[in-house]
Length: 364
Image (cartoon, rainbow, N blue to C red; front, side):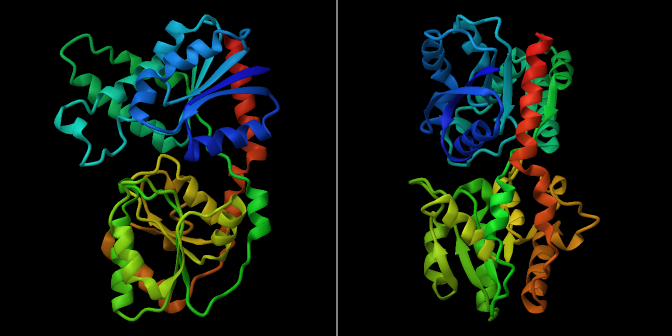
């Protein structure tokens, strides 16, 4: 099939997902993208620019778009109106925690971008969520939003969206990650941070925990990875000063291979995130055989069964610290959890995605 993939925010995890899917897919995919800047403007106006570009090409068999596209606006502007649209939801702006510093909250504009996600879902022919948690949380948040409207709430649209939705997780290069797996022990455990330097990953909780461990005399080393923006949380600078003696690496990895090497060298991934609709960084860490300590919430129970692996989960900050100290005292267990992440191998996920897009075309 000939597929036009449309990504208005081509950077970070969105770029990685699209590039890797294109590599593993059996379809012929042509990408139309915009840079990963000004995310609100991308949701507002990206459809205008991208529709005008695509209108100069012969129609494809299907469109594959993401949540950063205003799908209703795009469909109104494209000449290829009968081409089925598959919408991949990396995140949504209804159940995503907003930054306290965002001026749109004071201006009471914080539901506008979630409403774009809503109309995009109404317009799309098929919707792919990256986790069950994401799908459920979006539909619950949408119900709350629609009930707040003065009239013509159209609550039946929630079930309509549900009926054309399915879960297709993000893929990872699982086999490649196994090539980097070291399975070695260290004199002091190596703790890992491999997320974006953003507020929703709760870096304060992460680093405050390590400050306490350091003050109490616990021995550990630290690897800090991830992308940062020019407005990254100040706690990272404080951590660079206060945890200097523990740090093995602090900053963005220069290549994917270097990133995978750091993952494989780490022993413990301490997860403090307030939000993860899927958690690609968590899955990659586990796939590299790094032991996770993560909230019993969000998408994480979909990766590992909490009943089978209770030591990997916590439900409060107090429990997190208790388990963290125990792991550092008693040693990090090697449970070969990397094998549990094989289900996310792109060799499996890409085929699932290919079939779902083909079935959408058949239904249309």
